[in-house]
Length: 216
Image 1 (tube, rainbow, N blue to C red):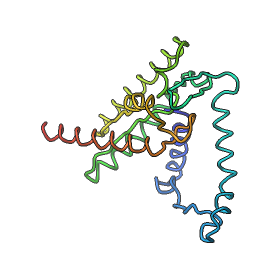
Image 2: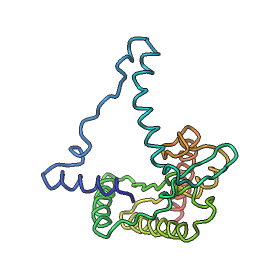
Image 3: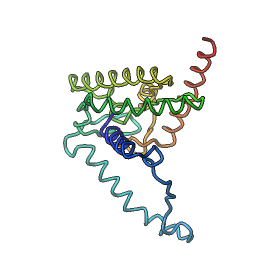
Image 4: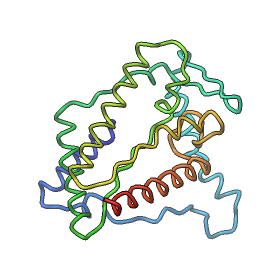
């Protein structure tokens, strides 16, 4: 669980305390379209999106930590991580309590209509690359321990909410040494290969767990 999860949980609680629902929290859907999308001027459409692309590139560089970098060579790609990637962010109990209350509410809503909720954990690029970092043993051990504690707590929470819990970390760690899975070396957004990997993992796990439930 990261700061974004905590912020969104707090925001949802404020919406709910003011009489709103998840619909108010999510807001009205908005179509995202280019200024020139209907004009046929493809070069103008590309230029229109260039500023957003450059901003993302600058964010990626800041994430890499400037001159303080850890380099991992996978053969097909060199991954440069800022040393702050090894910092273990541990959520406080108050943040966990709020997050868990909201997830249990979501699970209950899904269960009430006869469906089975699924809680999926997939790692960011730093957690995925953790086993391949050389040195920094104490920091790596701390980050790995935090990860294991987090997924263990999420698994217990899913069981309480009659949900299926899936952790895709191991498959991403196995495949990242073979091919790129994200849109850039420091970004957690999945590329086509990463999306296919996640889809296949989720499909196979759901099929397996549903067959296990039928047997029991």
